[in-house]
Length: 383
Ligand code: ACO
Image 1 (tube, rainbow, N blue to C red):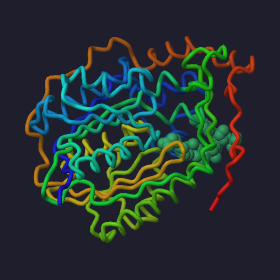
Image 2: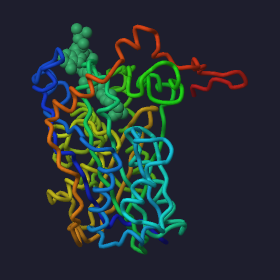
Image 3: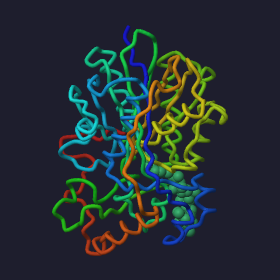
Image 4: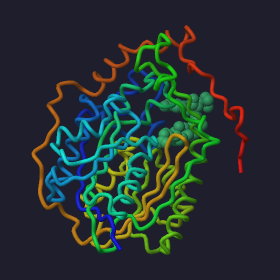
């Protein structure tokens, strides 16, 4: 049997830190509300395009694996906030790395994009389609954020991380996963303004309004991640007690605590980053995985559970077996260009450019085509 071992890992966090106090300078919110309801104290705001963060994280992951860029057969770029639709973003990382022998594809399942990408790339390695793959989770949410909506703008941050997968005869990497989608709840999270439905409608690109039912997403996320974890563990015949570490998606500390409780994993086995980075969507799980390694929380041979959920509402959970090596083989000199501005200055510059409120008042934030949930010829199936 062939497996897809994780042999390299790297992250890239933009340096500008946006605190809860910064948010309270333009929102009716407080550090106390954000900390007690979400567990978040701060998040990062990027001064560079998403591809640049992804490329730095990828260079670090390759150095960690001791692999040359030319040895990559595949680059998978997981994100819902790509810099451009065409050309795709994976090709932008490829050209920066000089990985000229690789195929390159983007995956968007919102916050689960890294984990779905991990499934796709691992399956290709196991099937022998490719030998060495790079899987990226990256998000640049700040330009699309509806900054004056306190229900959502306090929750998100920017960041990137990547892992290298290599073909192995040892039983390593993803041992089992469950992928699902609670599509009947897809209306609970919609970013109006992103996508072709809004093109040529008089809306400035980047003007967004977020439809966001936080409490409903909360409920669905807890149940969805707990059930996905149960199914993933059952698929590979591993008991919950055998989990050494849980590295979950981090949208809210209370969601994580509830998932851990339902899944039967004690909180001292859960690795948390939500306080420092908020929800970085697709970058959340890989950044947490890299930091768990840096903190010595991933031990040789560890079994790791990685539950996630995202817009769609996509849900998943992955059971991963780690190899013997928990330290990097090498380091990379790749760095982001220096940043001169504070996070608050970066956010206020985005806010100043947005025309959303005006666009909304002019009725421009409706999609071009009203979505029929059950178009003619289809039968609604809620089962
Ligand atoms: N500051 C102060 N008050 C606020 C803020 C804020 N930033 N945001 C909302 N409030 C107010 C509300 O207006 C409401 O006021 P009201 O009672 O006068 O109407 C009050 O706080 C309580 O709001 P709730 O929605 O009941 O707060 P709740 O405890 O449910 O927490 C939260 C809201 C944090 C959004 C929570 O529901 C949550 O985490 N949901 C899921 C998170 C999520 O979906 N993340 C992103 C999904 S994308 C992804 O990762 C898939």
